[in-house]
Image 1: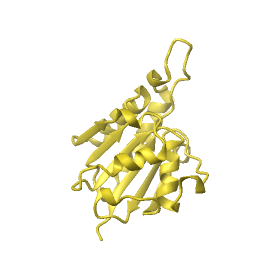
Image 2: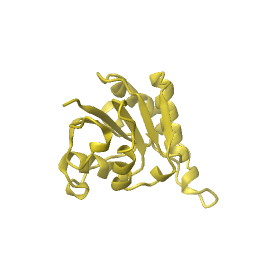
Image 3: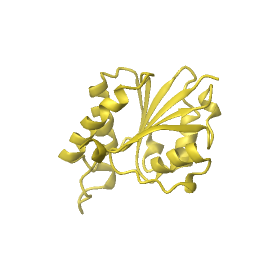
Image 4: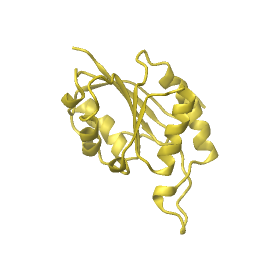
Length: 169
């Protein structure tokens, strides 16, 4: 069976929401930008090149995705998905099941707890089974035992690596 690759990123460190600013519009901090630049080489080193990015359209995930795009020299599809904003793990699973079958390596950029629970569910079979610490700008790389994206299900993933910016600093 052919493997699919999935890289899951929690957006980089963002400003605290002010009284006049919505959560959706929170920007990355300087540290958030630096952390993303630290993390990208790990994603770039994947044996399977990224050919699709699925991201929440919130300001902090959008900037995280743009840093990734620029650093990778990525020219493939970026899907800005409204329903990915603060999505739970089940929503992410449903979004991934609709990815075109010819895509081999997808990067997801989202928010906690949804992305941490997505990693947990894909690797353990149940999102609440693993209390995963997944700080901002963390990246998890999984190999999925599926041939088509519509076969994605809880427990089909094997964690290849998980990196946090703190490890690289």
